Length: 210
Image 1: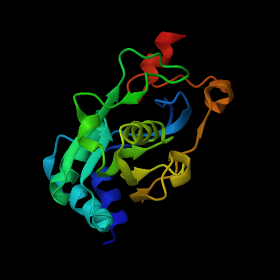
Image 2 (image 1 turned 135 degrees about the vertical axis):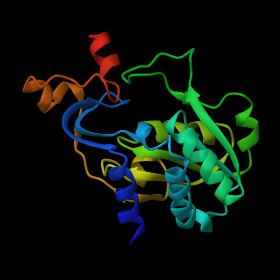
Image 3 (image 1 turned 90 degrees about the vertical axis):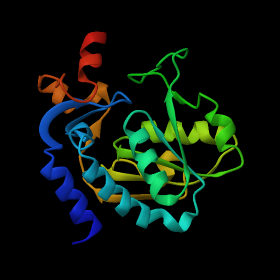
Image 4 (image 1 turned 180 degrees about the vertical axis):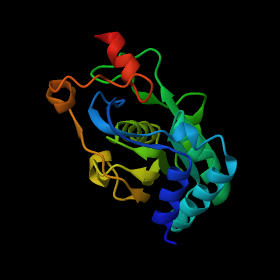
């Protein structure tokens, strides 16, 4: 079984892949699918295996620190750093900054993590790369703190953004799961009157803000 096949099986077994609905993503874009990683995380055996697979994919980068956006990327960073013998930190939303056109404020490094990444080889990670918004902001925060970002990695990419789109030379993922997305202003699902799913993704925040 290939790493991609095994990753798909893990997420399928957890019931994590949702399709045929109307979801809102953190950058404000809309789409017809969602990966509910929250049903994967409670089983540490699943995360341990995903971490083994991802570690094998990035070990040649000689990473010193692994950093992901909270909350999902935080889990990935902790487990992957353990497998790589590296340090683990996380980025979080800046409570003092406006969200702009996104659902939530930008990601920044706090808690002294900016000092920890300075001058070190850092891998930016996330669980699911949808639009690339969260990991792109994480990468920007790492560079602003003086970290050397060697690349980015994730369990799954939805195929909507490549390495250049998030600002790195290389993006490595275990599985590509193509789910299209659109800007909110030109969302075909909105035009068709399909209700926004408020249980998953950021639909509840979107509906509340309208």
